[in-house]
Image (cartoon, rainbow, N blue to C red; front, side, top):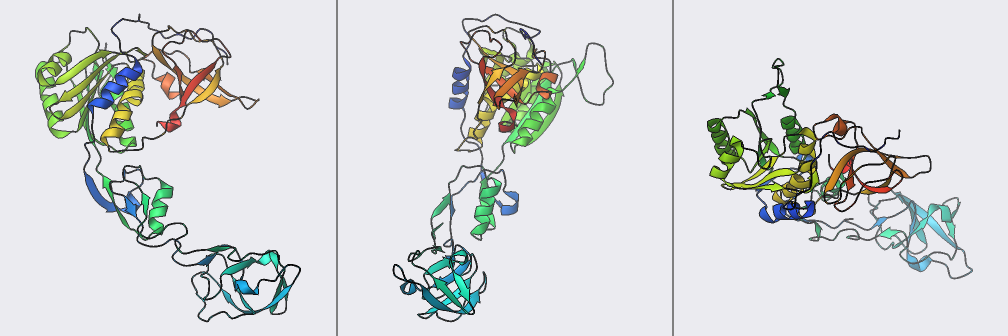
Length: 422
């Protein structure tokens, strides 16, 4: 579907004192540090947790010499010379888990299955496809080499070798790797505790009847879901009214109970609201105007030892600023030393997009491949910061760089798939 000049339902002018997206993120990252502790948990509960201590292998992997293929185990001195054919007697069969108790002799061979332990004296395996079998003998030619098709003890991992470094997020393959070493418990980082609340007299809790001039709170649910997705413990503090005492109490409770506080609304630059007043009293908070759309007003700082993120009130702006600013900071605070890769894909825009140079814009797009195998992306309709449907229907951000002007249909643009973020 082609659309022309997609534009948000609200607009703003660039201001001279705004921070670029990169500058704002750098300031945030420089202001946070790891806050997590450690705990010992069963390996079965460790997926998606962050490793707190290196994994050292207690064993060699493999623990013994074994066959890399199905075939016949022989002694390399029985290999024929060029032009010769050798005949060897089959004296037994070895399968994985059942080692051969005897000792192989010259002129003998053993049928062996993949993964089975190599018998004493044997050092070479001939693939079963490369032999001719007659009764209880095999015939082999001179194409083979000493030591072929044998995996040595410790070939993959040597005992006491560091297998995984601390600070990585454990994935299913890594869980399997740890299990292959016989390790049943691991040290991991403890989850961050995050306090979340929304502010505003106009907000309704789910289950309340509609009231004129009010809206249902969606931001809190978006933030809580995003935080739980990355393994944080969430303290849901609900909706806090526009009342100085209630706000003061909420910030005090949150700072005493959590590592990080997330709020939405009440941080617009120049707005005369109680939230800014209370934050100024209780913490060291910066109110920044960032050259980003959506999500220009952001509050960031600390209340005592608790990090504070004050995200904008519009639902899409909350999502954009969470994933572009808060997520990298949380990863650092969680002790993740190898931040998760959020790849971008170059795609052709299926329509023109109006943009003002001097700010980074995050349009919501649907990324797919066309009939020519090229990536293409279209926006998901109206792009206003209050239109949450534009996020729900999207599978990627269309990132329009700071100095880039308007986009023409067919231009290449940068996209960031949600699958790497969500």
